[in-house]
Image (cartoon, rainbow, N blue to C red):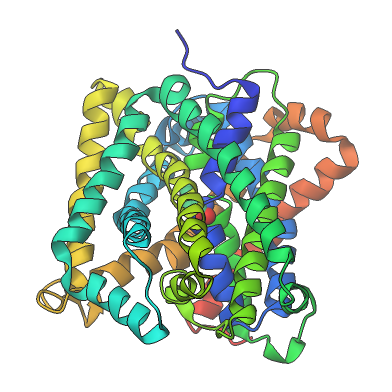
Length: 446
Ligand code: PHE
């Protein structure tokens, strides 16, 4: 039996992959750091002009290959007389690199759900010390929750596309959307809602720095799950009749909507309770618990609801981060899905423990390279290098390598849109990403 998604299952799973910690944890804090509206506009622009085009390309590549990342690139390589193109398929392992820290962060979320039940911190100082204490000295607790997150993720990956991944997403994504809508309506009842709306949608161009551009491009890759074969691998199990263009547009729209809604909710509460928007990565773990504390009785319930949404978003992305490597190992080495899952899971799980240790006071130095904690090395390497680089490879492989094979896509899109799309992935996206990388590594200044 071929293990394929149903049509709706494919959309939910792909939305599940895209909507993750990137939307609810990362988007609000980088938007806060870069001053709001202007950053949001640049981000929306990059989604529209780079993100969606590469999403369509990666989906199409997956459908064309109908297999794991390596086999797919091998197929494109053969058609074009470039056998070594198959090595590009190893981008399927980027997901394991991301998982090393992603799973640890999901573990933190589980920890915070548990600690919201036991009482919330009453001041920022208390919340800050709780978070610092967790990451610098509670190694055992972090490993416990990292293990819990790993077992949950591996359980669903082991179930395969239909019985594992689709099932998980069919339940969690609608629930997540409902929670976000409920929280949005609740936040509308606060006076600060209009301030939050202004902060997100009225640009203050003075605040826009060149770094904001760079982060916006990087984030549009991360948030749409591009450049590591997650989308490619899911699309290999695309139901025959599904439309690539429609699916890609639906996924980008929902992904962007959830990020904006998360931003609206978080900034409303921050402004209402007089907190700063530019708190950085601790925004969700330090500022939010204090706000929930100030809300009194209802606060704990809201905290649990909010963190559950965050956890669900994380889990549905996590399965898509592990699946590409698992499918590759299963296909290429003839091992069962179970052992492939255990094998790939162990790799990221163990490195994840190093990442935890690298933030601890006791072992931090031992698990740092050149003064940088392994956790940070893993996180920044994916965002700043692996995803954008693989994104260019995907754009070029599809743009130049598929030739006549793109006909079905042309039929689907109509000639005008097809030509615009083709120009985008052949020229605009690669140049934009190249520019972003050169800027990041200091070769050019904006
Ligand atoms: N898109 C996910 C998020 O926003 C992260 C992710 C990146 C998932 C790459 C899969 C592939 O959190």
